[in-house]
Image (cartoon, helix red, strand yellow):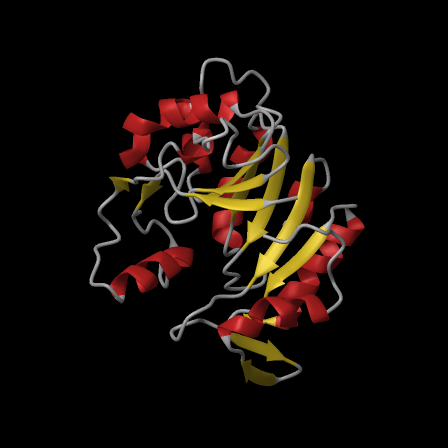
Amino acid sequence: MSYFNWNPWHGCHKISEGCRNCYVYRQDGRWEKDSSAVTKTQAFAMSMAKNRKGEYKIPSGSMVYTCFTSDFLLEDADQWRTEAWKMIHDRQDVVFFFITKRIDRLNAVLPDDWNDGYENVVIGCTVENQERADFRLPIFLSAKIKHKIVICAPILGEINISKYLKYSNIEELSVGGESGEEARVCNYDWVLTLSRQSKENGIPFSFHQTGARLLKDGKEYRILRKFQHSQARKAGLNTVKRLI
């Protein structure tokens, strides 16, 4: 499978504790760019772009990571989303994956032909602590979505979501620590707790990123960005092949 990034718009607004050290704000800050200014990008129509042979530049069977420098459900993008949904619908031959902290907006901005969900759309609901899990997950589980993933990242504390996993159609539970110089600690015990919950409920699990600060067996480790994914994989907790 080929992987592509598609960011139809850029910029976002911080809405919860998990947003505090947002990597988009951090990257934009290096160029003195205002991340709170939401703009339509030049790559807006990328999913429909073709080469000189008339072939799609994003080939059939690809995974398209969508809106990873914003939030696909962001209010500021309401004016562009209808067209984006149409492009997603027209490319049934590829899979579009987006994550959101605004799952409470989904029903209000779905396309008319959504029905029970597009088969080629995977939605990840982000929950960083127990409070956000208890708010977002009931909404997420009741939503008509074909493919659902729960993402506990950046994980900021111990989270118990067993009651949500028990009777759900969640296809994956993914956990990750926070990156960046100002990163908050990811306690490995929190990861193990969620790993056990996923196993008890038959949900595939992935520990996709340690974060910059990992606390394990009472010792804190500082981990460089380039090793955060590989070190997480070495933990041997993953039961899915696809890692976000």
